[in-house]
Length: 117
Length: 111
Image (cartoon, rainbow over all chains, first blue to last red; front, side, top):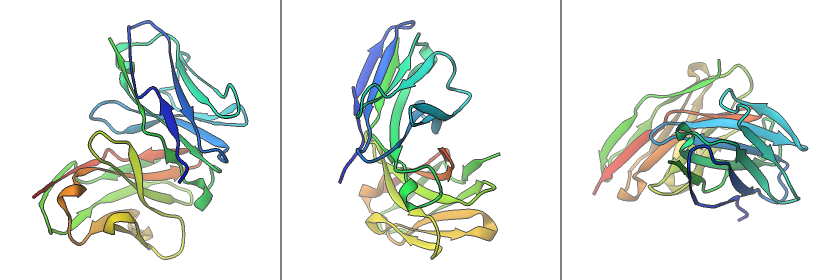
């Protein structure tokens, strides 16, 4: 069964550094998402992306965050200047469509654990 | 506001006991409802989903959930749990371009 993949599985960085988290969505999916889960807390929506544009973003997704689909397969999340509170597990997800039907199930990747020191 | 509430944060059961995890949602539109499981050290996996039709949904590993529209609930059940069901369980609702998760319920099954 096709699956969403993410790299790296773990990333350790110094505060203030830029990080790029990478995701390869399922190949026929058109909608892409990033979520994060701070240790011990619930999974929180960050952003959704379709047709090279952000469709929706949460209040967490401020100016230090950006997303990009640099080629036909990758979907990236960039954090420009990391803070301690950015330490979390970041999940990428993809779906065929974003609506209210069977094709809209979001499939999640295994996550990237980001640790900011 | 859109939200998902899970009633229990921690549940401890013995093997073969029955399980019911509560989930209530608040969302004004047509709902798609999900239960995800996260085993220790692993990523989110879809247990089951409801889009329409029969409100009793069967998922993988013997889990099922019942959508009760009048109660805005989507409770997860399993008749007899196993040690391998130890995990964190998340109820979620699809709200257009995003999925809203509950806080999760940590289930520990004693062998």
